[in-house]
Image (cartoon, rainbow, N blue to C red; front, side, top):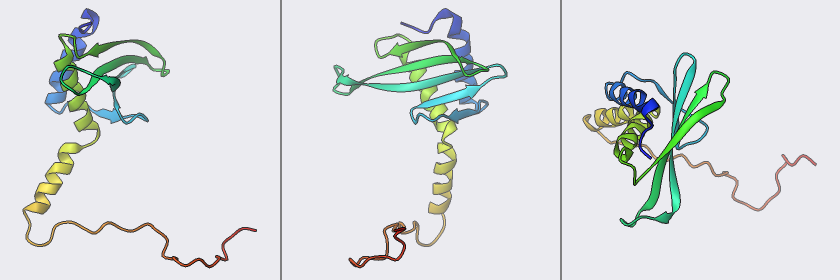
Length: 143
């Protein structure tokens, strides 16, 4: 399936505006899904990987787009897979939405700023393990 005609102008408009950094994409509770909120509706885009592999040796991939009303109900949607003619456009939209929602460009810019300064780069990872390494009992036990 290619992008349904009904959605074509919306998708291409979102792609153009997202490239211009003029769309506020947000994260969702699903780490592979991003959403843009319009006044009365929302559009989410989700990346999905299959359990089988394609002819190129990578897992099958497709994208699910859903139209959501102001009550949070999914009222319409469509799926694009690797065999669809519009797959590259949807994948580009997803990649740009992800970069926007996760502030990836800002993160990269901050790393470049640090790299251009003199001195040591990076910090040691904090160890969250307990400092109590012996086998004695603790007084915090609630019984």
